[in-house]
Length: 257
Ligand code: CO8
Image (cartoon, rainbow, N blue to C red):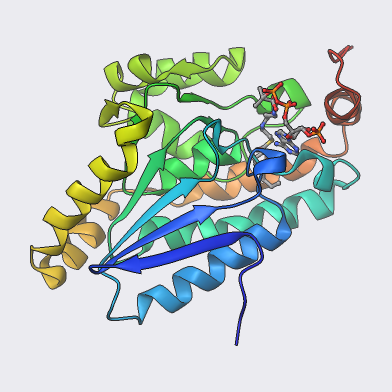
């Protein structure tokens, strides 16, 4: 029997509400949390009591503030590449290709790996306080969980270039304008609204929806993900990565050469 360390799973009316639960680290994705997610999606695939999955973060401040920087700060290139490859395979690809709908209820910060998880989900609903972005270049990194591939598909190449280069966050309203999230609602209404959408989905043909997901996903090119993983790993051997992650841990601005 598997017990979740960092996930809360509540199943009701064919909807699984999955809460990523590491509020002390703004729900940053560490190894345990990724394992929990990987395990959940394996189980949920064959669990007939689940028709739709909702992913959200615990607390009122954050969906997921990224991969756990403290956990990977000491990694080298090989380990970095393995981390990205394993994460993409075990979690992010599994989410995107999941044959039951996965909705991200973005209830606060969705940064780095957090926005990547929201983007791997089939669509996103945000609360008004949400802030979304890919700040990896502030750490001397690039997105490593599919962000270089999924962000341009969702918001266009030029906007994705600017967002990744500047590391700026989108407000919920701006994310709505550019199609990164489908709706923006009050935080207190977020889970109710997403459950309402999920309920509508549960009333439609699950076999048809399964085929629709596969067909919609079929337009994706796979090669970019491999290039992302390789580049992500290479950056771990650069001085900028050491400086960027050390600066985060020491709560100061990085001084890139
Ligand atoms: N990793 C680890 N700890 C984190 C993270 C994180 N990503 N984000 C926040 N925390 C921790 C903080 O260190 C802090 O802990 P402590 O109290 O022990 O110091 C606690 O959560 C609360 O955070 P803050 O005090 O910083 O809260 P603020 O409200 O002041 O700031 C921010 C909120 C702006 C969200 C700020 O926490 C922040 O900038 N976080 C980091 C955001 C970020 O850079 N995310 C991207 C990470 S890199 C990434 O995701 C790479 C993806 C590809 C990975 C592929 C394989 C690894």
